[in-house]
Amino acid sequence: MDSTKQFSSLLENSTLSRVERMRLLPMRRMTNRSRGEHLAGKGGTSTEFNDYRDYSAGDDMRYVDWNIFSRLNRPYVKQYRHEEEMHVMILIDASASMRFGDKFEKARQLAACFAVMGLMNMEKVSLFACQHAGQTPQILSPCTGRMSIKRVLSFLENLPAGGDFPIDMAVEAVLKQHRGRGVCVLLSDFLTFGAMERPMNQLFSAGLEVFGIQILCGLELNPELTGDLRFVDSETGMTLDVSSVGDLIGFYHEHLAGLQEHLAGLCRQRSGRFVCLDSGLPLETLVFDTLKRKGWVQ
Image (cartoon, rainbow, N blue to C red; front, side):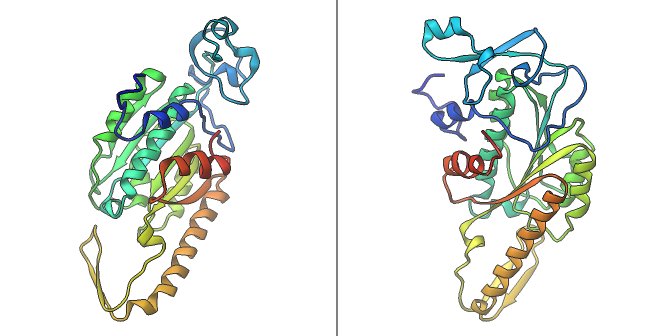
């Protein structure tokens, strides 16, 4: 990669370089018993060579190519094809509410990181974005390998936001298009009137471990509002007039905490995970600190 030229508008070159050496850490590795790209370097026995990638801490030293190391003084790991594959399905909430603050931008950046991790570890990766209810989600069909990184980043860079597709209905629409067991990275603010029990059950039944990531901006996490205000729903256009909004801040925090506890419980009961992230924090902090510390990535 040319260090003087920005490879993607979503990720700094230095960030992309670090992400390429990372991997997803699902609690259950749900794989498909078909010819796939799950790396023998992570436990496989196939002898069909496929590609190289940078060495990461914890990799099996048996797969380091010492000939390359002696020439470049940098360790690379040999990758082999395996008889199983893990599918990384990434679903991005592209409804109008995600345009508030910088939530959608952070969702696209996080989707790019998860996708690159999957591609560099030869997992099958597909992306879905849901905007308008009743319309087919925008889809990037399953792809794998380093050569697909530019395609994935271009899809995310050109992805618009705006619409009324609630995340609970979006999951059901996406599952009509998706095939394969593995991980579902669900990027949303989860601000929906619908119940999430059914879509979570559907994801679990499809053999997908949920990485539920709620993205909220600073004003949603800690609103500082006073006086009389009119709230407008960005997706339905409905309005709500509130007098002395400051008196309701405490109730808002209680409701938000209850929502997050409920979502975390839904994920946990189905062997998944949940985290709420502040869209105002740097991407590097979210990926290399928060998600890594929680054991979502390595």
